[in-house]
Image 1 (cartoon, helix red, strand yellow):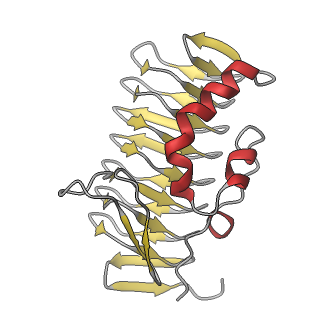
Image 2: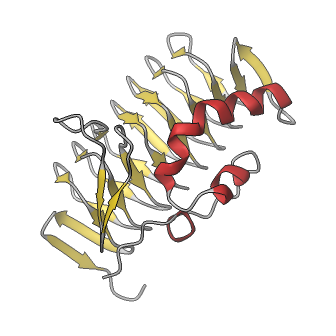
Length: 222
């Protein structure tokens, strides 16, 4: 079971304003420290079809934002995205098209590609979520180790990131069940599903069903 960790293996980024960022780095967590400056540069240069919703907050066409949502900049919200009541976007957030940012969901310093769903009571901090990634109700990306030390990615080899805050990395098509905790630096492979109420740490392969950290089943006919 290969445990993929590179941007090229995990994501197919077709979002025009995110492509340059994804092409620049090898690993997804490398994008997190530069994300705020990247978003600010995009806002300064302008994105075709986007307009200023609030200070340092730019949104695409047909974005629906409910009145009780709170959005801090710098933030870019892609076309067709819905930001539901009580959502809290804390800045340094950029998302693609047709995403759902749900009630009482909190986002901070993260990237969402197209058609991501974080619809109910989710926390997504210092994380990267791929196309069609989905997080069930109450699932969170824990982004800080209890000892406060830099995050290590526990894959086929140990990767010392040197970064203190890294949440979850969910590849294209990843589906995380309700009530899950992705501990700092957890990577979920493409089209992999995670059982509800699971606490995970490490790197999990593509096309799998994760029942718990020690029970990973590769789907057949993939």
